[in-house]
Length: 159
Image 1 (cartoon, one colour):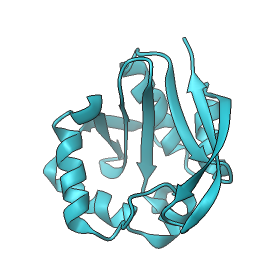
Image 2 (cartoon, rainbow, N blue to C red; image 1 turned 60 degrees about the vertical axis):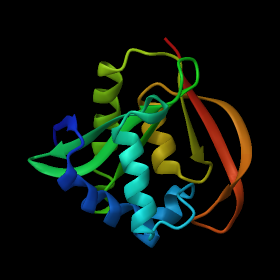
Image 3 (cartoon, rainbow, N blue to C red; image 1 turned 45 degrees about the horizontal axis):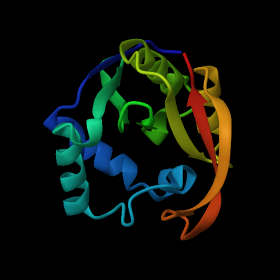
């Protein structure tokens, strides 16, 4: 596995983020995406809100060997904060999401932290488990990337 670094999100990161989050294969796995992942105006508005700290959002760009490979962050109010992350599909399976989430957790002492994940997204569920999250709930939700309701799992990191 390659070492990673986290840094603030920069304007130049956004075209990469848009390409990754509008990749049909990646969005299908993630399942819970924006209604139209190819809508650049909606994407830009969403990231403008995130970068302004709306909803308590704190996001970091993930860099591995000098290359931007993803983003990781958290949003929500104390007691109901959720982590989120996205890795470029070209870098899946290298341990980068786990390393990035671990690094983010070290700089984010707030607990508990939660994350909703598609029940069948085993890669993402494994990342969360490796970082100490445990399953604390189950539900069904509408997954825009799949156009249907699917099973989802709530994971939580305590202490």
